[in-house]
Image 1 (spheres, one colour):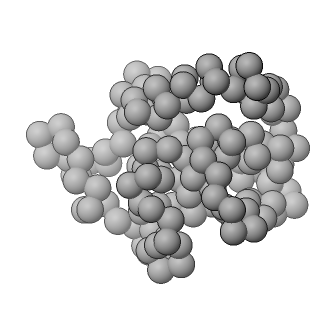
Image 2 (cartoon, rainbow, N blue to C red; image 1 turned 30 degrees about the horizontal axis):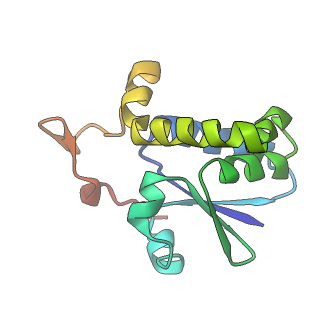
Length: 138
């Protein structure tokens, strides 16, 4: 079982998790929203700030991050085999840097691609999000 900790306030992140969930016919993945009560109750040992910066997952007590999570997740559901190329040694270096650039700008990229940033209506004040007001209950 691969437990993935994701930012449900990011439209692109949520879309990716929804796709993974649809293809997870054998229940290989556990998706945990970083803004949920379940995360705070059961997984608080996973650093929230670090997981908000870079995708985190855990398998058998070992934490993996970034594109290693993406590759492991798609492999677990038997889809998107091309993603494994991003873990090849020469490509990995470039892919990891591109991922960091994406992760650091995911809300802006979400807005450009979907017209939605991470903020739900009513949670933004002057264009800045107060994530503490957006805690979700499971």
